[in-house]
Image (cartoon, rainbow, N blue to C red; front, side, top):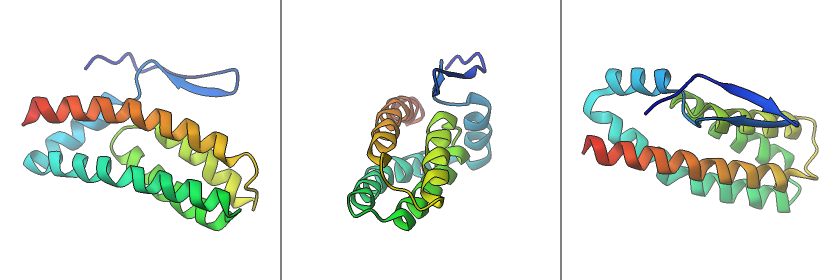
Length: 130
């Protein structure tokens, strides 16, 4: 993977030329060795459930549920180098911390789209390592 290190904000939207911080990703891959594929698979399998939980909490106007799930997803995505996804979750977490839920579905949709970008890259990397 090639990455130029650019993460930037444009029109209040957090964007990136690449959804993964390659340094974080490669450092974790090196540290974990053969267990890295399993970690990626756990992440890829758990995020759709977390996104569904975010949507459910949003529909129920459950700011605490949004906060907890966004916090968890923020941490796991950041640890794997998915910094755009991490930042989107951080924004949603901060919003939910205020007790607000209106407009959260828009943020959750952005998280879902970004996850699809991350998923494609992780799946490609898994196939290279297998």
